[in-house]
Length: 219
Image (cartoon, rainbow, N blue to C red):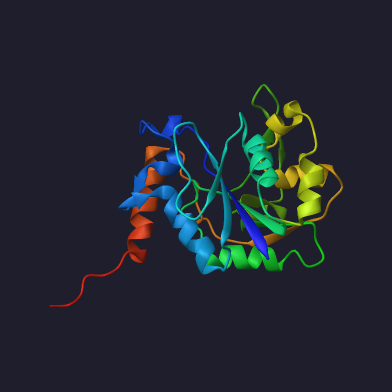
């Protein structure tokens, strides 16, 4: 049985909504509820939410205070979670589907971590500090990393057992597993599983979520 760690402690400053991002209303409900629906449809009932100050965990979830960085929030949520494999998800990705959770958890067979990711379609160039191009990367080997990210619990615990300075450098928890020598498998996703960061992202998410809202009954 898996447990979910839902990271919802971001302030949402770049969103400019005046409250923590995960609790901004999106298509008629707090953003976090879209992820919770997908988790429960995937059969994941145990959920620990890393919360910002002043917010309460949604009904049926345990809540912990989020940390100063994303991985600190994950570490705090993991400490409060019941036994089992772990799936970590950012509440700022409301377009996640039940299949994302099921697929990443299934891909743990033979791996320490499995992560949702979309193939990179843009040309990606590397530069120095002077902004002069030093290399054009082979995009056929590149993936844009998302959440959910599923973990063998012991592998995640080992990965997070580091100092706060290193945690602050981690842009995702899979990197910490890689650093600790663990195996990480990519599970193909699509760009539709976007992260809401700006007002533009919020408008796109609102548009895409319209397809999931109940349709009015015919007269």
